[in-house]
Image 1: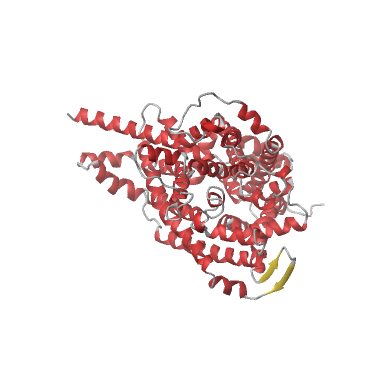
Image 2: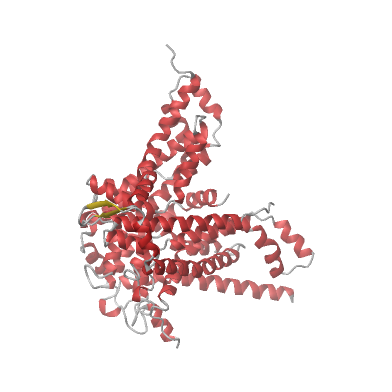
Amino acid sequence: MVKNAEWIGRICLIIIVVIGAFTMLVPFIWMISTSLKADSEVFTFPPTWIPEILQWANYEKAFNVANFGRIFFNSFYVAIVTTILGLLLNSMAGYAFAKFNFWGRDVIFILLLATMMIPFQITMIPIYMLFREFELLNSYTGLIAPNIATAFGIFLMRQFMKGIPSELMAAARIDGSGEMRIFFQIVLPIMKAPLAALGIFTFMFSWNNYFLPLVIITDESYKTLPLLISSLSSGLYVQSWPLVMAAATIATLPIIILFFVAQRYFIEGMALTGIK
Amino acid sequence: MKIFSQRNREAVAAYLFILPAFGLLLLFILNPMAQSLITSFYDVNLISDQRSFLGMENYQHLLNDASFYQSLGNSFYFAILVIPIQTALALTLALLVKRSFPGVGVFRTIYFIPFIISMGVASSIFRMMYNKEAGLFNVILDGIGLPVLPFLSNPDIAMIGIVILGTWKSMGFFMIVFLAGLNNIPNDLYEAAQIDGAGPIKRFFSITLPLLKKVMAFVIIITTMDALKIFIPIYVTMAGGGPAGSTRTAAYFIYNHAFQHMDMGYATAAAFIFFIIILIISLIQMRVLRSDVEY
């Protein structure tokens, strides 16, 4: 009797979990499904999940809408450069906060953490005016520079670097190594996993970022993917949901692939930052 | 000649290590914050390129601006809806996928995936799905005999559409946070309670919930901050404010005044009031939700 109730409970649980998962996937399924439809099939009743004829040409057409290749490259380039510079600068700062004693350390660190509380709504207008003055609106520098250093990144690296035994550095100093050399040759190589986690977060944040490009980019040729997709969905370039969704699929795919490839680092990094 | 002692040399190295990152944060967060405060006392119009001192005038105007109050009201309305719904669903999901059964990892991943995509793209997908006559959402509702919900054209329910989108997008993240919290609760507590005859509901309310207080506080504070700042779905899904401006939130108000009216002084004043409100709410929440439970 007890056994039966347990089985029923388990089956109910699995049914709920499966229905939940399907619900979560519907927008993705619908995005991909629409991306392969003919325009005339988009809003038919009842909705078709699998298009009658798969319109692979939609992807080719999407590539030819509004400079798509260049915009894809922009997203990629901006995310890569932001990630590389972010890893370097944030881990350098995190290292100093974790392993050095210096005057003002705790005050600077708290000031730094406080920057996490400041919403973009406050900073975006001065950033816009600054870039306007220095002619950095519509530039890669404008898209990259504000997102390199983050309190989150410095905090994350500091947490991990606290675990490095100080004897390691002391020994290297006795051998006459300079501080830069110690950082690059001793510290960074043992920080591969945390660097991977931070790198994935930074890449994802930059790839997905919407607000900064919205504020500082007006020129077609410096737009990034999220901006393009949202302009497409408002019907700016074409009135064709299949093309919009084909573009959305292309924009989403890299980040999902990255997630699956690096899932381990991703979850580890999150577990170490979100809680405690 | 030895000018610096070893100790001083290390301090210099530390400052040099910090300098680049700190310089950027200074340039792009701390200084803009100060600039923002200064700008809020000026009339800065970028179209006519003029700048004149106004004192408190921007703030006085804001306090008499009905549309500003309305936008704050909309932000709060969204937050009040989304916080309980999203948190309850995230916790439910975490409880569901906490036990191990075949394929549990796949389900965790599926619930998490919406979190990793761009809000700009997600908002675009929902814009299509909410389409009044023929979007998937309404076709399904119509198909099973329920009344359609024209999120994009009915001001009374437009915000519900944003709540659905926001919850779909973020609850997987908070599920993972809850999951980590649940895994920190020692299992012997449950075993002891079970021996004492406590049923699953009793166990949830007297063990799980109290011991999750710290995680719960984290989730609620972060959700509140994010919810109050909601912008992208308003701009994209609702095509800038929704039917009859019913989803114009404070973040949208600020963006609109800054980059559509180019009235930077007014927008920064609004941003500052908005920031102070968020700050006060976060501080109150931190106080109220402070947890003394240790285990």
